[in-house]
Length: 238
Image 1 (tube, rainbow, N blue to C red):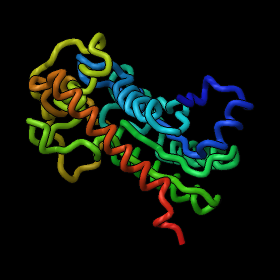
Image 2 (cartoon, rainbow, N blue to C red):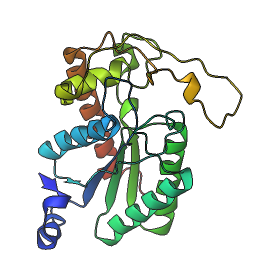
Image 3 (cartoon, rainbow, N blue to C red):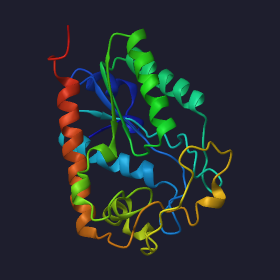
Image 4 (cartoon, rainbow, N blue to C red):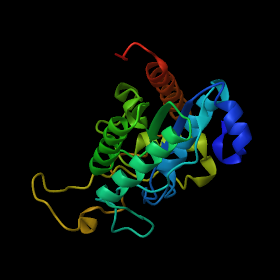
């Protein structure tokens, strides 16, 4: 397995003769209810990427632990950056990967907030316009079949994420709290919604199980495998 952070530059140089593809996991440091750790988004992306790196010739880069968090930013432990900051940082990282010899970069994000995803997508677009290389942006939760999730409209710290963490780091799961879907205005733009967020859950952890966690994890791994096939294919080139 090619863990970038553990390799010397001669090892990386030699590895680039075998593959020029690297996965960059992106997450967030963000509250995930009273039962999950703040690194939930990051570790989910990292562990899925690690599973792929064990079976396939790709480099695995150190994860980016911070993202854009809006609705959860009033909670202790949510450490957020702004849209422009994430966009600029992600762009610089992508350009540096290209300059370091990587021809293909996949950003695999375990955090999928709207502004977070917009910043990453804009960074990817900017980078491919500045360098001749290929970039993919993959959200972990787009890879998991919603039909396999018992809870309708399950979201943040709910059934899916709790199940995944029961599979990845069960020692960090502190129970399964009750369903909680906070009510928020449909159109109103607010400075702070912490008072509307309750315990920080936006879903239903109660139906979470280890078996579901294994299933969701495998769906994510299969999805990344397919996304890598697309990234490494010549079909889309001019």
